[in-house]
Length: 171
View (spheres, rainbow, N blue to C red):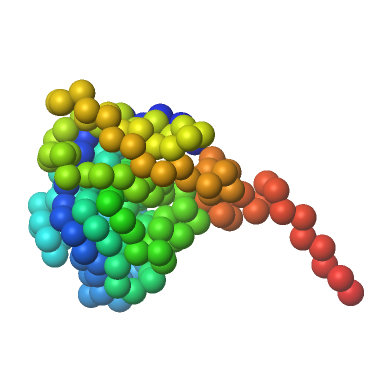
């Protein structure tokens, strides 16, 4: 995983729940992220999914990913080409689903980030640093634990376990 990301901010507010990320009606037919990415955040902004560019960064306020604990909410964000979500806080289940699927959850102050801002995110040992090009302001956030960085570096929990776990089958 790149320990530095750069991308365009795509800004949303507080309490973006998993049904806003991908609605329940869309999940009835498939859980395939490549199909569902066309409907990303359509409840809030019907034109959003079509406007996403690979490398865009989702920016939100408090409690991102609240609601149900469905994994597809994280996988559809990744399928759209968005490698990270920056938010003031995350619902715990979304945070773990993000890490387990290789989506980088970054906790930091987001109130000074505007739609379209160019952001540079550095994941450092001592924390996270996000620079907003428009203002040259850098905001910081807590570090991701080393084991989570290892999972993210591998691309998610399944690739991590394939590379590092030793499974023993006993008779």
